[in-house]
Length: 303
Ligand code: SF4
Ligand code: SF4
Ligand code: SF4
Image 1 (cartoon, rainbow, N blue to C red):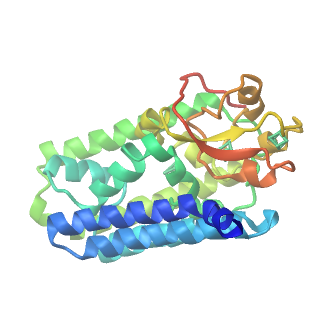
Image 2 (cartoon, rainbow, N blue to C red):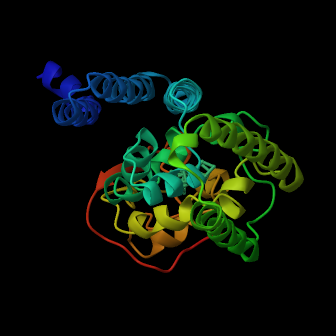
């Protein structure tokens, strides 16, 4: 019986690992390239390690599970696929590959992590894998000092549009050539990422909020949020266990009004939730769990 209970704890870890291995096998079989199995096997392994650490470490140290996955995937994406594989993993690279009709690693990455995947795991990419956030999460303001400035969120939409128009201009007006690729793509990626890191760190210090860049400037949530509304995996508060102490809400890096969802008897339906588990790790009564279900609402409760 004890063994069964132990297995239950690791069931979703094993399922996630197998899911990534299966994607790897599918890509390997359809492209005859074993490399895909290695990539997806590695990503599944990184998620499994983080998840095992999260399950087994003490409450105070649980966040190291997420950080381990974040570092393992983040460095791999930017270092291996980007710098060694010469792929532009920025959003402009994704647009460029789409216009060029190239099915590159970046295309698959966007489809899985940022467009279709959020239908299942919401914005977990932002909570546990993004290479920009893996640096931001080591800055001092894990808990934002001030409430979110909702008006500034419009910047992310302008950023998205500007990135798209830039690629349209390069591709259709300047006839940016496919045979210039990949060296130019690498230059784009290096410049783009340096700019992202500088702006993101500057904003974190300016707003005293590690995730200010994610809230206001990053263009990724523009598409990611559309599918994240319908995410199967969301955080749920057990109202029987919740004492309404408010600790989860105060510590949420994305300023989500968790207690408003509790009051309405809903899961945390906000598409700003990045499934970072900070709320669950800090809850003194272990009232918060990631659960599966089908529910959504377009109204966001944000502080
Ligand atoms: S919002 Fe952008 S920068 Fe922030 S975690 Fe998500 S993808 Fe990374
Ligand atoms: S930290 Fe736990 S007990 Fe406190 S309000 Fe949040 S869910 Fe309820
Ligand atoms: S609600 Fe919880 S899991 Fe979601 S962003 Fe806030 S702290 Fe992270």
